[in-house]
Image (cartoon, rainbow, N blue to C red):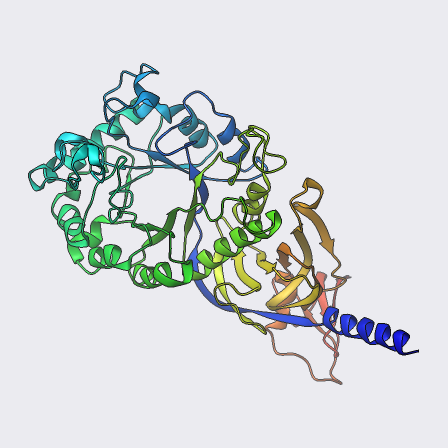
Length: 505
C-alpha cells in the first residue's frame, strides 16, 4: 500500500508540473524592425569558398529551407605568402574574387552582401604588414592604420566596390574594421575608439555612396560589442551622419549586456544594430547536442530582445555551424554540404522574423539571460509572430494573449536534432476569433507561432459594444457601423458574437 501511495503521489506531482501554464501577453509598443539573418562566406578565417557555391545555395533566399538574406565577406588585404591564396593563382590586387561566386547568388536571391576588412593593405600600417603584429615573427609590432594613410582608407574601399560592381555584385555595406580591439597574429588592425572617430569623422565623406548604389557604412566590429566604439561615433554629429549601422561581436559578452547598451543609443538616432560574428558553441565535449542548439536559439532570441536588427553567424560551413564538413570525427550527420540542425534552428528566425517589427511582451516567467524559458514577439503585416523556447526537461502549457483578435494559428516546432523533429509545422485550432490561445509548451523545444489577425473582427471590437439586452447591430466589412444594413455585412448580437450575413434590400 505504501508503494502504491508513493507512485500515486509521484504521478500527481508530475501531472501538477505538466499542468503549469505560462502566460505571455503581447503588447502594442513597437521596437526595431529586423533586416535579417546571415553568415560569413568562409570555411575558415579569411578562406572564401571560390567556385564552391553549395553553402549559399542551400542557405539563402526565400525559397530555401533556411531563408538567410545577409552575407558577410572579407575585404582582403592580400597579404603575401598566404598559401590559401597564392597557390590558387588569383591575380586581382586584393584577392577579392574568392567570394564573388557566392555573392552573386546571394544578390540574385534578393540578399544583402557586406564586406569587412580584417586589415587594410600592409603598406598603410604602422608595422608594414596586414598581420596584426602579435607574433614573434613580426617582433610584436602592433599593427595600426598610419595617420598619414587615413586619407587612403575610403578610396581603397571605393576600389573594392568598383571591382565588385564590375563583376556583377553591388555591395550593400562596408565595415570599418573587424575586431579593432583584438591584437592578433593573423590579419588584423588596431583602432582605439578615438582613432575610429577621427577616421570616420574626417574621411568617411570620401566613400563614394552615389556611385556605388548608396553603399552603407558600418562601424568597426569590436570583439565583445564594446559600446565605446559606437557611442563615440553616435555622440559626434559629424560622424553620426556617416554611420548607418553599428556592429559588434559577442565573444565574452552576452547580448543583453554590451550590445543592448550600444543599441539604446543607436535606436535614439535611428541606426541599425548588427551582430556580425559569433560561433556560440562547438558541439565538442560540452552539452548534449540538442541542448547546444537551444543555447544558439536563446542567443538569437536575446539578440532580438537587445535591439538587434541583423544577426550574422560566423562560418556557414563547419561541424558547429549550418552546413556539414564531412569530417567523420565530429557529430553524427556531419555530411559535407548537407544542412545541420543549427541551420534549422536559424530558420525559425530567418524565415519568420525577417522583415517584422518586434513588439513588447509581458510574461509570467523571468526572461533574462540564460532563463530556461524565453519568448519574444513580432508583427509583420497581418501576422503576430511569437518565438518561445523551453530549455527545461518538463512540458508546460503556454497561454498567449493578443492585443487584437486572431483567426488562425500555426506553429513551427523543433524538439531535437533528428530531421523528423526539426521544423515540423502544425495548425493550432482556432474555432472563432479570439484574444488568447493556449497550447503545449514541449520540453527542450523551440517554437515559432504565427497568429493571423482578424482585421474585421478587431475593427468591430473597437466600436462601443452593445448593452447586454440591446438589439443587434450591423457593420460593413471595414468595421463601420451601418444604420441601414444591406448586402454582405457583419451582424453583432447583444452578447458580442459576430457573424457575416447577407441582407437583401
